[in-house]
Image 1 (cartoon, rainbow, N blue to C red):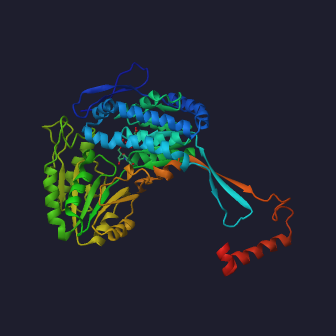
Image 2: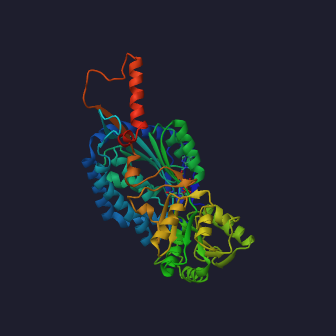
Length: 509
Ligand code: NAD
């Protein structure tokens, strides 16, 4: 069952069709934007950028508020498109896509002006100067997005880039092109000036063309494999990028954890979006003394999850066959190496071609692919550990470092563990909700990414901080200007001796 299928075009450019992962029914056809058209889109975005930046924050925010009103009004229509392409349940679509999109539009409309306002910095040493940090837009931002959050992962960076005064060109995943296009539809309906936000459609070739099309920054979300290529291309083009990549998030359950909450959190963290979530819980480390009860209760809860494609259900399909193949490879490798499958462990063909039963495994070890590679499916491997220390060692034994969770009734203990985990973020007593906590900078460590998005840090990443250094006294000349004399050198040495060589100097220096 192919979700994305190339079509014959009689040499008039490339074209593909997209099908629903729920039903296999064709959803529509898309013309691939050629590299020349991508360059033209970026050139138009560049021409539109100065006027957009000049509008100022208040005027730009008005477009965000208008888009928010429209999204609230048309959310059912938008959800139909997203659900058609992803197969998710409606409540999950509201939670993962529409709710955070509304929050993003509102938060950045409200706060961008303050976050990007000129800042005065008082120099610690050069007391005759004043420093003003002024934020300028970068220019044109290219946004490349994956299929697993096809609307929000395009909208949220776009809102930040736009509010910072950039124009934007988005390349959505070819698996979910219509959900990505909704972002352009929304802003067009909100009356955004022409060429301020453009969508280009296609696959890796189109994404590659966008990176090379003269943009001033790339905001990329996707796999580690593609992220490396994008990072290399950005390096070649000498443009900044954020790379939001894959993960293998660990969950540490301490013996004093609230059992009910930890069990619920493990199931939600592992199976939300059918496990196709960058911050899915993909490894659970639970302390021996509570492992038996924890595992039994997790399995009971997982067995109660409802797979489906209509009515009320919890777990939808995998997005496409490639995803199922990875899951099967990981489960079979684990099974062959001695893992016990407590529930699931097979496709659910009776529901549809792309469904996999929610699966819980124990007796897993770090020599299994399921503990080392990103699975991105409804699979929860549980490992028993002696204590927090062993859990921490195993949690950090990964090339990934996107997010993590710690479960304990003792905040100090949990915070101490959180600070020792090598990941971009950590949640205590909750599944990974950092991306939804919009003020929190979000990004990965190790192979999980480069840079951060969201909040002050993310928004400032869409701008260039220009320091303006202002002389306060305007004397006729500075003591270090030409001509150089021995006396000037000696004067500097005297200052150094006093500033860094005396206790009083160190206080003031
Ligand atoms: P992917 O890397 O296959 O594709 C991502 C995007 O990159 C798509 O739009 C694709 O067309 C484009 N692309 C492919 N080759 C390219 C190239 N050479 N140059 C430029 N663009 C190119 O990822 P995917 O399968 O769509 O998404 C799933 C992955 O995304 C998972 O690994 C998941 O963990 C990750 N993800 C990370 C985050 C995060 O915030 N860290 C969020 C969501 C998903």
